[in-house]
Amino acid sequence: MASASKTLQIGIMMDTVQLIDLIGADILARMRFETIQAAAIFSPQVKKLLPHAPALKLHFLSTTLKPTVMTTGLTYSPNMTYDQCPRDLDIVIVGGSSKNHRPAAADKFMKEAWKKTPVWLTVSTGSMWLASSGVLNGIEATTNRPFHASAKETHDKVKWVDKRWVSSPKPYEGKSSLKPAVWTAGGGGCGIDMVVSFCHANFNPELVNFAIIENMGYEPGPQDY
Image 1 (cartoon, rainbow, N blue to C red):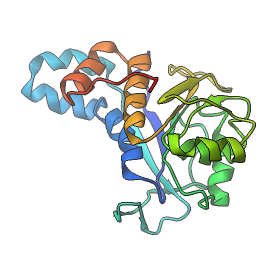
Image 2: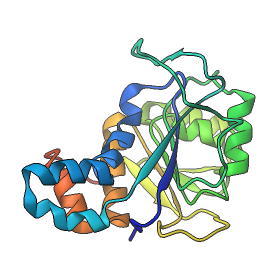
Image 3: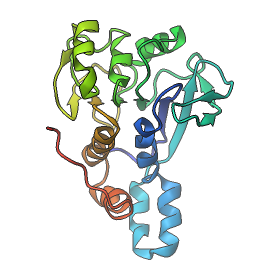
Image 4: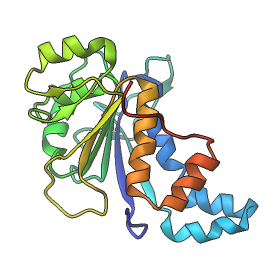
């Protein structure tokens, strides 16, 4: 289980991606120490979860620090560039981007951070973005269902499977309380289920039950369609 004594560093590749693909970041934030501490004011029994609630530091990544636009038309300001971001994070979240969105700085970041960061979570065509760097070669993964044929044609060394989400072992050069793995999901709804399943596999069960199942009213769906 993840240790609450260490601040989890999370990199979020946001530029030009679908907003729903990144909801996983908010799901993780439901479990962080500050959120549970605030909830304990209204529900004293929640105090017992504080020792299990991790501190989080979120790095919202883009090529530059200039305001950029997501697919909804939402404009946001990144707080770190790919070049500035540490490579030894705890989690990287990759949302779905268009096929022609392949910044050199993002490619360099993925290649350099791949073995130094234990957990990668991709949603929709985010797995194709990660695959474009070559790090998914030989690994079982999935992507947005309508784009499976394109994924197989473009990245034929990846073991593409038709599932809602997949968790596969990955190389990791370091020590972590998180289980090293790359989690890939299909569309945005599949991605939400995937992140909740990731939380079940890596965090205190009571914390997950309160922060996600009770607080959000959400239970993940199955892996298979």
